[in-house]
Each structure stands twice: as C-alpha cells, then as structure tokens.
Image (cartoon, rainbow, N blue to C red):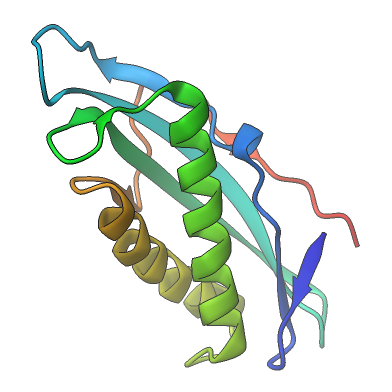
Length: 141
C-alpha cells in the first residue's frame, strides 16, 4: 500500500516484518534491560519527476522497560510499524518540503518522537547498528 502526499512524494506502508530486530544488548538483569535494533532502507519518490531518495535509518528499542515490562519481538515489531505509519501520515499530510530527502528527515524526526512516546527510550537514528542487516522496502507503485 502506498501513501501519496499532496506535495508529490510517496513512501511505503510499514508492516511489522519490515522491522527485522536483532538483539544488540542481551537482557541479563531482571527489570529494564536489553536492546534490539533494526535497519531500514525506504525509497521516497517524488511523483512529479519520479526521482527517488533512499531514506536510511536505524530503530533501537529496549527489550524491557519499567513502564511497559517485557516487549516480545512480535510486539516490538507491531509498535515500530504502527509508529512509523503514524509518522508517515503526519509528515505526508503537512510536509515542510516536497523534496524526498527533506521528507525523509522530517519522517525520521517525527517517527523518533512517536516511537519514544510509545516505548520510552526508543529512538530512530540516521545510522544503523553494525549488527543489523538493512531491510530494503520495495515500492509497489
């Protein structure tokens, strides 16, 4: 499913399986502990001239938090996908710039805000963790 925006850019709809989390810090203590990370490469297309920018970002989430308790891999993937889709809707409905590269930066910033609200300590980063393998999301135009 593609999301089209008024400024002429598109991004994909995120699915839980797009977030191929790997454990980067093992959970060894009771309570809040451990980290997972995923890496995504997502094309953003300017539909006016069909230019493509690959938006690259890493997603880090704790395995367990004080507030949320243990987050299973399935739950972490669902939360990440839901938050990414919400960030995409917000950015695509009112982008500050129609350029795909700037839309990518706006998306990462909004995704970081929403994800950290959902699971405190989570973050969206420009760089991917070295233990992750990039998940490239193909466009379905």
